[in-house]
Image (cartoon, rainbow over all chains, first blue to last red; front, side, top):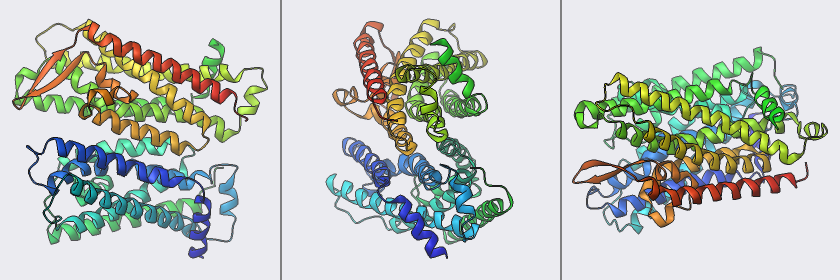
Length: 243
Length: 252
């Protein structure tokens, strides 16, 4: 049943030009970050780490969370049109299937964005003339970033399913970004989904996480994902669909 | 026209748009003032109106394109979602008139945001007991530059939000604009002037210059900013007219 829900979600995205939205941000982030790194190599001397601080900061801290919000709103957009919530809720699939299918589709798109961003980071570094080996933390940044992005997407999906407006959940996502900065500065980053992304991707501090911090990171992500998705699915089954 | 504008604002009364805008602005102001307070605590030379205006101009480059995109998207999306375009046009309102009314209502909301920002700057300066009196002329120039940039961006956002039913593209444009607005100062001047989002700092009366690891605040002469201001007004009118003509001729 879940497989059929996922197939249906993919069909809805066909010819939607969503790939344009997926690609534009990593391209702009890496272009501007690499150009700034190239022009300030006298100050930015830590090669790949300095490049990461330039390209990763705005991508991981500001624009990836907003992109997640846009993608989450995008996969719920069709349901909010033409009373489609009523139709989808009366179809012979469970509410959990509908939610999880949307979550998985967003997750796959986010994995694509992450891969694309990391390829651009590598190409940007090579174009800037970096010859040393890539940072060993890179794999951790990639996977932890993706895991945190999945957690944020559960929150955003839950919002986008309840709120009819496309832009409002994106606005809430943006406000959360600033709350995340506050939580991070107050050393409470592990307790807020958006801060988990900043911690996981090492955008504000490039030092890797200890094994204990890694375990806490995974636990907090699991906790948020399970709690929010359970709440969202419960809400779908118990409350009336507003179409 | 006044009727059309007031009806647009009337339609927004239960949309919680004003609440969201105020929340958004509060977050920006708190963040900015915290950054300024930290700088002042490290170096009391920063306890100046010019410093607050310069920092807020940079922050506006990030926040306002996204805020404008969200406002305009909400104003236009309610017609797309409710399938009310045809209904509106059957009450003998021209499409171009609707376009202007929506533009004015979005501009009024963003003007309110700018005024609140100005009041917040004055309040912050008074609480922190800045030595100089309130520089009203500087604040008016700051507000004029911000309002002008907002109006141009609203024109561009409205064009996309009305022409393309799928609001993901309009919001993504706002997000890309926010990025360009934030990173605009890193671009060469010749390239920067082609991006409307860069004018939040481009038309700011105070610019920052980094020399010998110190921030120098330079108050720009009005005449130096006039060509950029005129260029932006022309670009804004061109974008508005092109959008209005294009959308008005589209089939509903």
